[in-house]
Picture 1 (cartoon, rainbow, N blue to C red):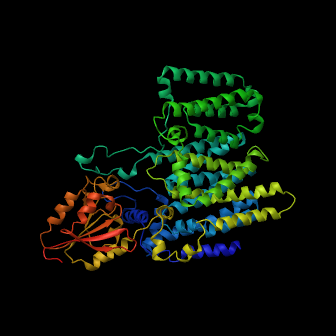
Picture 2: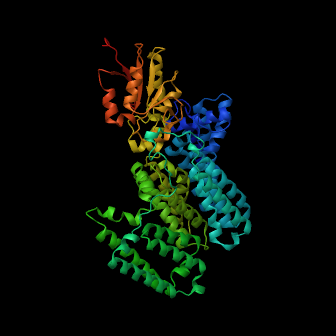
Picture 3: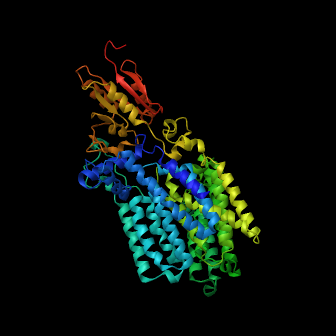
Amino acid sequence: MAFLTVATGIYYRFLGFSQWSLATDEYYVYRSVTFILSTGLPEFPCGGYYTRGLLYQYIVAPLLLVGMSPASALRVVTILSNLALFPAIWLLARKLGGPRVAAAAIIILSLSVWQIEMARFGRMYAPFQAIFLWYVYHLYRLMTEADHRRWPYLICLSIVGPLVWEGGVILALLNFIPLLAHQKYRTWSSVVVSIMVIAAVLAFLSINFRTLGAATALPPESAGGAVSTKSLIGSIPILLPDALAEPWSAAVVFGLIALVLFAMTRIAPRRVGTQAILGLGLIFVTLLFNQLLLAIMVFFGAVLIGWLPRSVARQRSLTLLWFSFLVLAAWWVFYSVAVLGNNLRLTQQLEPLVKFPDLYASLIFPWANVDLLLSVLLALGIGLAGLFGVIRPKEPMAGVSALLLTLLFSFVLIGGSASLYHETRYAFFLYPLFVILALFGIASSARNLMPRTSWPTSMALIAFLAAFGATNDLSFDHLRNINSYDTNFRVAMPDAEARHYYTRHDYASASAFVDSNKSPDDQIITTSVPATLYLESVGYVYLDRSDHRHRGQACNFGRAERWSNWPLLSSIDEVDVTIDADNGGHYTWVIADHLSLRDDEWTAYLNDRDRFDNEYVSPDGRLRVFRTRHHGDD
């Protein structure tokens, strides 16, 4: 059964995979690869470098040299990367839960629509997912078997990962799990190398390569506020300064601090241990700064890593400390609701307590909005994995604890990073681990309920597979039509689902319409930069200064668009001047994408029947082609 589903999954991954035009983000990678083929580096014509998916770019480059089409070169790498994931799925799932869990994981991830769609998407998400799961497999072997031969694999993958996707910094952080978990892993070489890797990765990510060595992107009149240093860490709402500003609340805070410190003096360090004291101290610091969610995650992290085993957590000397922690947490709940409420909803009042890491915006809402049933199934299974892997561990640092700790680190990174967008694909690398842990949790539940027979485990896994079949992630109708126009371009698909699979736009058909209808001397203006790849002649790119894309794509003092190196127009007035400057009686063609048409002024300008005719709408409905009118045009 597993072999049949793998074969089916491979078939749908390759079915018509290069048939349709590049998606927006695929275009960016392709253009950067062409820069590599020209200069050896991913350097923009106007200066600066595109380093996202750097290693992926250099793998694609020789495929273009041997004559592969852009779509084929970009996507064959991601499909093969996705297939390289399957040995890791089998090995990890079998080590964790046995062959039945491994077979169930293979079945789910072979036929998963999301896995197949992202494998066909020419970006770095599928390659990094494979790197991540292979890393987790070697980490699991190291933690459960004390196999020190796994260290070189961990170090190499933690170096390669960030070069494939910037989120690969998580691998450099995960190197510290063994070091924190047990002294036997803290050799001089492992500590020094792990520190060097994380330092190098953070240094690499801190450099703004996109503007390195480039001319000023915007003209002087637009430069104010143009340069921003994007933090890798999201904002942390801290209430402590406000609480200390008022005498009565300051007195309460200092009283609670005194209570916690007194409770800590009651602890017997020799019985509790240095690591437990460190973990308790971290919990106190996070609570002091009103980070209740982070405090809970620190607590579970300390339990998973073995700093707070049950034998320590239940000691009577810690009772007063646990009580003081609860009182401190209750104080911040009261302070947020009673003092900072100001007619806000309860969820808004409590937001400062659970905003960092922002798991709701970055993980919970995007996933539940796309597939609530799948989200519930995975959460239930992973919860059961935690129950049987942590509460009833066979050893202080059980293998499942290492995997759950990996999830915890990843949640903090994803929810705590500064990001303009929250998309499910940013957590795509975790999906196989979610599935494996959920299956392990279900199987462990059945095994613990009826330990003397094996059939309940098989039935539980079959029930999970049946439930998975009811989710949106298993759709044979979607797979049968995966190479069709409507499926590829997400026609009539709900917006959240389209973003989940990545929204694609039909740039090629709009460009082909212009090329087949324009005269040689007609000029072109496009708001869709990827359309420049398919147009036969050079024109202009229009991105209004108010468009969020403008600051990232303008270069050379605002005179050029960064990716295409076409002349850049930054206002409707500049579009007007460009059109009016053509006094030879030729037409101007405008390709407008759905993002630009959200601007009411731009939409009204194009819909002016005295100036433009709407000549074409792409079949996906996301691009429109307008042509200027001349006197006498009907």
